[in-house]
Every structure is written in structure tokens, then in C-alpha cells.
Length: 107
Image (cartoon, rainbow, N blue to C red):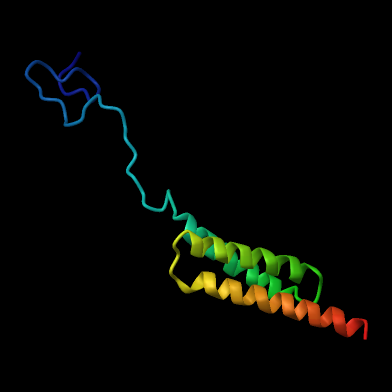
């Protein structure tokens, strides 16, 4: 082997780089294990918004119930932000809107 070859043996007395031969370890990212309370609050908010949009149909009532359930779940898990409360409120509004539309259709 010629001296100075890039992939040759480094020679006697050469020091290998740090962590040479160690398996690769991925760095831990905080976003990997999200808080389940935050996820439930976000789900409540999104489902509440969709329930308001679909309040003209029967889906508004179903989505309103789901939004309320997810918001209460987030609060039970210790979530203290406003997303869960907003999801609960929008779920209630979606249910009331859907009931009012159903009543107005049959009167």
C-alpha cells in the first residue's frame, strides 16, 4: 500500500478519531413523545371547528359530541390551555345549531 492513500491503514501509532467503531445513536427530540393532553385539546379544537362548519347537517351534532368528549378528556389529563375550552364551547354551539336547524325544518 502506498503512503497517503485515503482508505489505507493509518499506520502504527495513529490515533483513531473519537467514537470510532461505536454504533450510531440518534439524538432525542422532544416532539417525538407529545403530551396526550395537548393532542386531545388540539383534536377537540379541530373537531369543534369542523362541527361548526357542518352544523347545517347531522354531522354537526355528532362532531359536537366528539369535540366535547375530547375537550373533557384533555382537561382530565391536566391540560390548562384554552384549546380544550374552545373545543368544548364550539362543540356545544354546533349541537345547539344543529338542533335549531332540525326544529326549524319540522315547524
